[in-house]
Image (cartoon, rainbow, N blue to C red; front, side, top):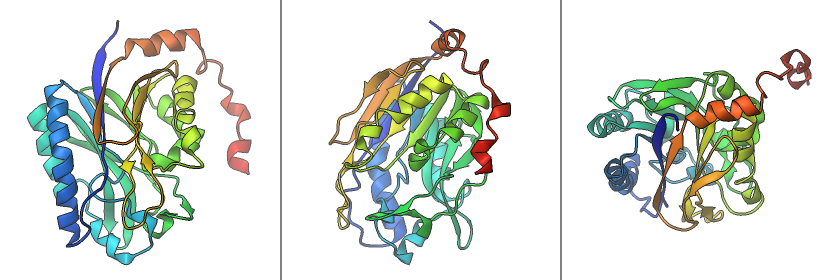
Length: 289
């Protein structure tokens, strides 16, 4: 065995009151997540990822300016500051997806990466922004990401982030591998229906094509008042062979934990020489069209 990292994913339902201020809503979701973070610490989790826009409902189900109030800066907003304290308390790397404000009126779907000593390492901004009905009106809220595909050197290994709809695009997944990712986290909010059969197909395929681990996180349940469909949970880890090594339930709040042997990455890449045999000089048509 190589270096083993114990990693965790938290999936929850936003079954909270949407009355009150944005701060009230965020506090209710924090209150749901903090006990699971404590559980992760008790179980020895070294790397933890939360779901997309974790501290609120999936408000993109409607187009209403009131949800702009959910934004806050990264890293200088209250949620990231709090999670820095939590990460330091537990000695745990935490990936924290929230609604980010760069300046007034310029907002992103982002995830902050916090190291085990509480240090803010940087952020990823979701690149691919869907705008399809019913219920996924993300271009109303988010500007496309502009920070590339960073990989963060954390106490738990080299961690990359992809967010939800990004998973349908293999190009960024490849770049994360080229940038050195050992574990890629994909916090999501996806409902039953058209894309559900892809949930256990695309991300294991990324893991195989790029020789790294993937952690896929989804919400749970039906969120009122929009009721756009069932967030079907089933958050999971898959290894560089594309095998699902741990998976959560479909319908309940849950922490899923897996021990990821990073030594498997070298073993798999030495067998399947996809990086050696790449032909990037022939791929120009990808960006020419």
